[in-house]
Length: 108
Image (cartoon, rainbow, N blue to C red; front, side):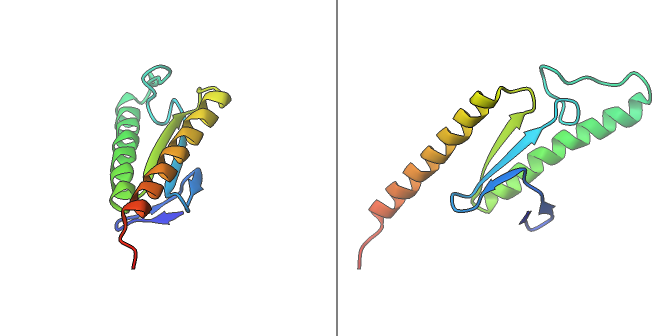
């Protein structure tokens, strides 16, 4: 869990040392553009609910980024090997940025 200014955020997988938050988003609940569906009953409620979920995702992403976290959102339908590749690539990039920042810091 990460506390932002406005909320507590439960992250699916967190790498605190690299400040990487990974969310595994369900296609239905987070309105996947490929697999997301809209129920045909109680349309008003579900339309509001699913739109609100997506809006909240964007707000949470921004709040975490404001705190210096990188955010990676993964769809539940993504293949495990692709997910591992994406997470690994992001961690390598974050490590490289940290190393570059450390190399630029004045020594004293």
